[in-house]
Image (cartoon, rainbow, N blue to C red; front, side, top):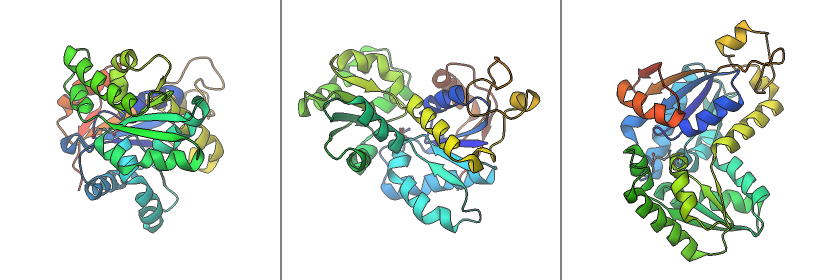
Length: 296
Ligand code: DGL
């Protein structure tokens, strides 16, 4: 199984694209909804909560965990990779985040190296995007814009309202007020794709707006191609098992044109029925198989 973790619902926008791109695997999604949002929490707190979630997913049998949350990727990934993983009983398990693959992509897209990042206050304050982009593209300029109201707007299903437009326009104007020449804008929070239409309306047409789901999915497919030792450890979806046998990370099984359908199991620290309703909006399809768990 591939573990996918987020503070709440946002990671589902990433899971949706991963499952579409790599349907032959089984997925275990964990949303720490009871303790979300993470975006305004301290560094230590986000690190501690994220480590608990990673350990939990490892214990459930996931050899690979994706932190489908920018805040967790920004504040916890590096320490978990460098300090915690090597000391665990199985140090061959892996944790990957969403910031590095996004940083790689902006270099392919931007023509003038002027990059805007929308994120939670925590992600922007961590300067993780500035650091990752500087490593890969040292001539680029990165302008961060915290958007503290966007997650609550999405969580309260207020996306298509004048109130949402007000706060979208406000943060877009603040970002472009810093640098009108920005040609690439990253939605650096997994909730923001649900505000895409409104954001696209206010961002100048000369700038591209990038969501992370497809980028992370493509990057994961590439990772599994380069790491067959990990790919072989991943559990296949039931349909794939019953079908034609092992297939490579591609959308259809090698032996037939019928796309596999991924097995997805959902865990939440909140009440399952609450999770189910909102998760169905993020996934664009009914979400079932939800179990409540406790992290500690
Ligand atoms: N999913 C988080 C992220 O991508 C945002 C939600 C939160 O603040 O917990 O940054």
